Structures are given as structure tokens and as C-alpha cells.
Amino acid sequence: MTKKLKNLIVIVSLGVLIYLVFSANTLVAEDSENEAQEQFAGAMISVEALVVTVEPEALEEITGELDIKTLNSIPLEKVMQSIFEEEGVEIVSSVKLSMRNGSMAEMNTKDNEEENRKISEEEEMAEQENRERHVSFRATSHIINMNKIEISFDFKQIVSESTLRSISETDEQGKMSKTFEVSSEVVLRPGQLRIVGATKKDVAIFLIMGVDI
Image (cartoon, rainbow, N blue to C red):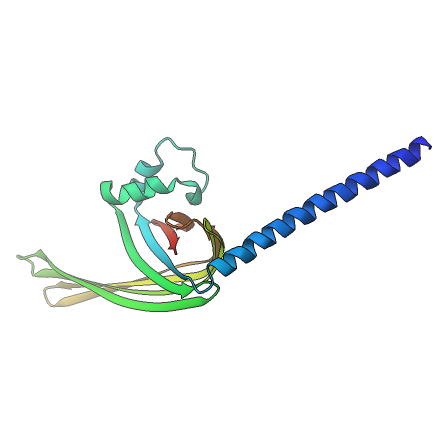
């Protein structure tokens, strides 16, 4: 047998071996997924989404000496801890969906907040702030196994703020609208929160998501 023929046989044998290993792993994965679908057929899944805003000063406190290249790389525990410890950190939205495994659910919410305050008694200055928040959330779930749930989602939040300032007999009005939108597909572990989207303009905004069965 020539050397070239031996090399050819070795190469072909390796190719067959790699194919068999790949096929076996694929079959095991498919069997595992099929078992999960049978085990969790009809199971109810809850998906929770939180929107957290962080002012620039608070963001500096959170990142500290960390080597942060993107907002998504900030450790989740740092953001969650700051909600209780730092000024300028706020949960502005919290919504939850319930759905059966392999199905889709969606919701739309709308709420208003209004605040009135006196700026100056002497000059009869007063200010009224109104915040309107609209959230739309849609998600599809797919249980991979006990520890992994795949979620495809579309999340959108629109916050409109208006300020009416009265100075004696004169009124000044200002309006502003901010949109935060994330669409993605992620794999989450039940009972564990994760940052699934973030952006920064004048403030940093994080979308944090968790699932449970």
C-alpha cells in the first residue's frame, strides 16, 4: 500500500469519525429536547421584564474601577444593588407575562403620574409635572430543559413627560418623549435575572428579564 493511499484512508476515516460524533451529539441533543417537550408539555411560564434607569453620577458609582466596555457587560448584581443604595436609580417599569410552553403572549399597559408643587409662595410660582408611560411587551417561550428556557421577545417603552410652570399669570409648558426598544432572542435560567438590553443617552437604561416555570 502506497503512502498516499494510507494518508487518504486516514483522512477518510477521520472524516467519518467526526461525522459520526457530530451526528451522535445531534441525536442526543434532539432526544433531550424531545424529552423536555414531553415533560413540560402544557407547562406555564412566567416572564418578567424590568426597566431600570440610572443617572450619570449613579452610573459612575456602579462601574467604579470596573473595566466596562458596554453597558451589557456591567454585572447585574451591581445594577440591582444600586436600586437600594444609590440616588438616581429607579425601576420605571415592571411587567409580567404568563404563557404555555411554546406559545406567545403579549400585553400593553399605560399609566400616568402627576406631581404638583409650589416653587415660590412670594412670586406665586407653581409647577405641575405629568409623566405618561406606555409599555408593550410580547414574548414567545420554548423550554429547552429544566435549566434553560429560550425567549424571543419585543419590548417597547415610551415615556412622555410634560411640565406646566405658572409664574403669576403666565404659563410655560414643555414636553418631552423618550422611547426605549429592545427585540431579541435569549436563553434564560429559571429564577435568575439577566440584563438583556441597555442603552445610554442622557441616562442609562437597562432591560432586565427573568423567567420561571
